[in-house]
Length: 55
Image (cartoon, rainbow, N blue to C red):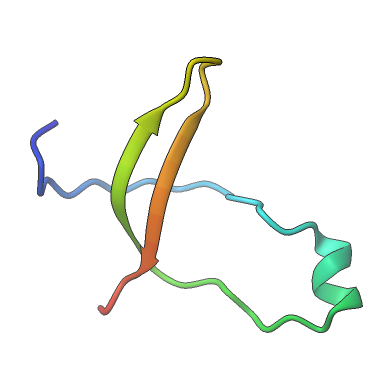
């Protein structure tokens, strides 16, 4: 895929457990995200650099 290409991905990315949202009274974080970089890790996982999308 070329740099700057647009894709649509749907899924659930969980970084903070549900109980932490409740326990720490965190605000809603669902939004559109911009993927700045995807870096494959040696164990088959991916490190994804995300930023909130402006639009």
